[in-house]
Length: 389
View 1 (cartoon, rainbow, N blue to C red):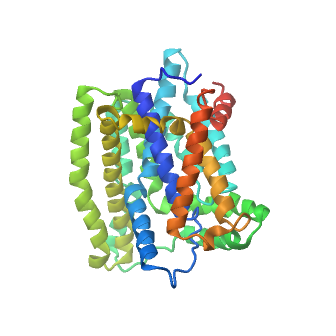
View 2 (view 1 turned 45 degrees about the horizontal axis):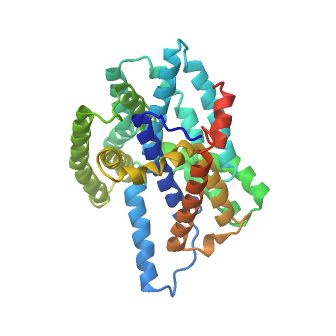
View 3 (view 1 turned 30 degrees about the vertical axis):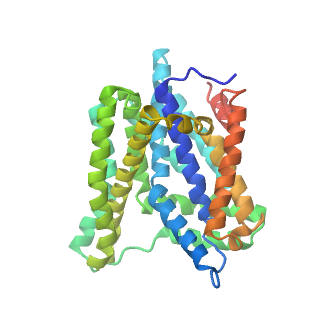
């Protein structure tokens, strides 16, 4: 039987997680799963040029750097739910959660066998911050999260660059690993692709995350999600609706100037050493602000409008997010990489987003059927059993 007595704040988290994973498959599809190889557009119709550009710009404006952030926020929220449930039983969840992160690392490497650029390994490594802060006060956790969100390493780089603006920034290490990955994606067989992905692909993903300010932002979002769970910010109360309104308004006020400044910086700062860290600081903040707009807007629509029925359709999809994320990688790699159908140079952006929509629809239909007879998705069940739940 399908579980129907889940608490409303958990239901909205399931639906929001489903929304984030849906956005991720659309982004990954138009990126050709981080391959970025596309057919020539020479001779292509003006209409198709327009739809390609509109889809690419629209998806990245709406979801680029935001879908993963929502996913990270809910990762911290899920930690709180599990920690709190175990705390009520008199159990200390911290060591078990560390084991859970080890298992997530293994799931991440399973995913990495197929997808060059997966995020689960990053989550499994950064996730160890949660047992370290889970017994601190909300105020202390929020201060630590704020420090992480403003990117302390990039501020250090910026100060050093201002002191010596003629120094060129180091060449990104991730570019070396991507250079190793792309030829294999374009010509390698399955075994060659797996071997490359488990080292060069993972190193490309992790070094890119470090160089693009994702490490500290992910840690911050994990902590914010945990505090959101503690404070019950996802529950539908009058006080929370007022809070969401304040957050939504503040996010709008912050987003537009930050977004404008982010686009203007290259025109006014000639020093690459200064521009690189400053651009990362500003862009990470405007993406965070936009993500808050999406989350609070989603909460309002879920609780206060008839669209709640539409959003609830995403709940089974969100409850099977691990299964969906990994199977997306398997299907996408098969479609676009050389070892599979090698459609990367056949499908343009418009066709690729249609592929992403098709994958999402098939997965959603499977999830709705599966969750009528099970309490967890297949990989969620294995993960849960492996760490003793």
